Image 1: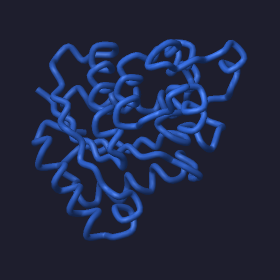
Image 2: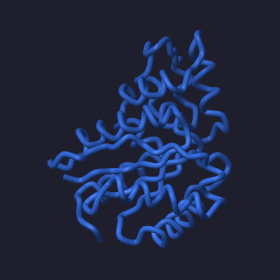
Image 3: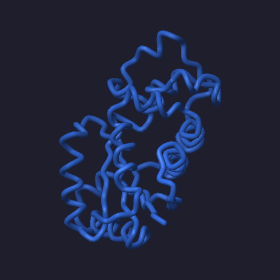
Image 4: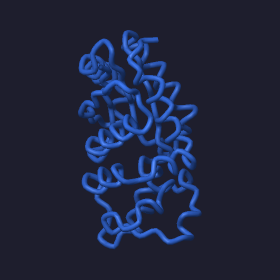
Length: 198
């Protein structure tokens, strides 16, 4: 059995990412069970900019996932280019825990951009309303994807409650078609969840 230990930056992702990864396991495989561990929450700036914190959290994740497991670092890209920032973080992480498989995924620009990519599939979920013209929004363009989601919910958007609910509901096929960073998450899942150390 393979285990995945994730490192995330928000309380919403602590609750939401395991929901999403379990859905990926059902949607894309593998046939063997993947143990999705409770994510480790960090402060992104401190994690990335303080070598001792970077090392400590990575070693904790490596210990949690075990020899057959892998470590997933998932952050919002914000204003960074995922294709440039991701490989840099990956190289640093691999130097700290060379005995583990590591994946780095930067949601472009935020985790909520994946909801934008499949917005119509969330209609009615927790009061979310998406009109036909809203589906034309380029999902990874808005700087404030959380704000876009919030604007389409009369009662507002709460990361710790709505993010897990949306992660359980949004159309994975649509998100895969429309979001390059979501495709990156899927490809890392496919590559690493087989339980073979490269």
